[in-house]
Length: 118
Ligand code: HEM
Image (cartoon, rainbow, N blue to C red; front, side):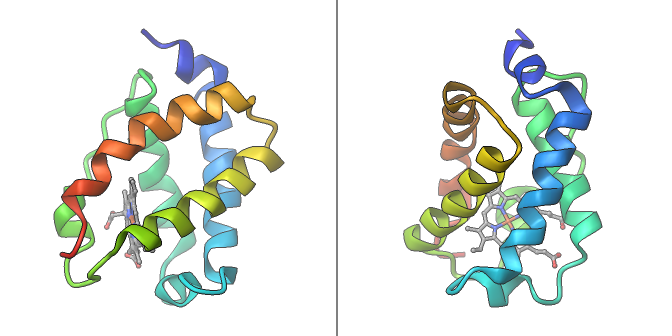
């Protein structure tokens, strides 16, 4: 079922939201510092593959698993809430319909357990 993938405007639509998202991340008051050394192109590209796959698109995320990617960060629930706020701002700015925003957030939510406290 690729309805979510198509609703987001396929790969270019997902990439546009991810570019916006990674540009906003370093500016966040509390979690921004974690992204100061991050290559935004790399992160946007990895996230695009991941969200494309989660949305039912013809992609395969081939980066590190979520536990390894966030090893040593000791992420807490509040960090995820902050990240979701930033993602919501990017989705809003890119005109993703509210229902399609929430469908994507629902796909991402289960992943957070793999990273908590690691
Ligand atoms: C469901 C939630 C999340 C998902 C799906 C996610 C996904 C990813 C992915 C795909 C990468 C790239 C891995 C790689 O190629 O090396 C990454 C890296 C990263 N993530 Fe997350 N992440 C999530 C939550 C968070 C949170 C809450 C934080 C901190 C507030 C965070 C901070 C970072 C940082 C700092 C990097 C490393 C970037 C770099 O290599 O410089 N992530 N994440």
